[in-house]
Image 1 (tube, one colour):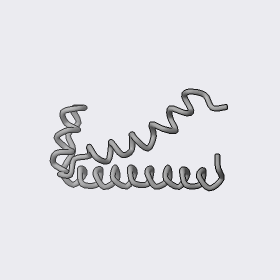
Image 2: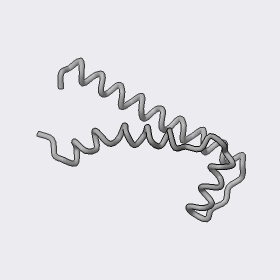
Image 3: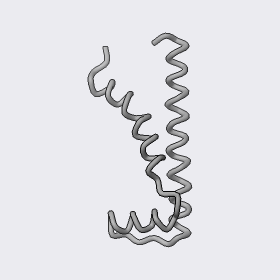
Image 4: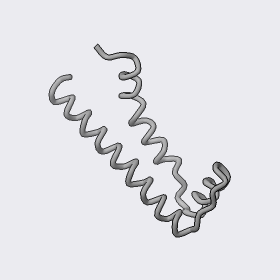
Amino acid sequence: MRTFTQHFLRIASPIASAIALALLPKCPMCLAAYLMMATGISISVAAAVSLRAFLVVLCVSSLVLLGRRHIRNLRVGA
């Protein structure tokens, strides 16, 4: 039997990835500005472009892996 924490994490992880992807700024300058306001760390636009690409790949790959796990569990009947 699953604990409440395991059940919560199983439901919350795809939702968190989707929200992060939806709220990710499209403009690298905006990402750099948000990072500056939140942490006080300033980065160049080139670094912001790379950071944004990394975050997009991270969110999409997380959603794909979670989707694969969900489909596999549907097939197995778990």
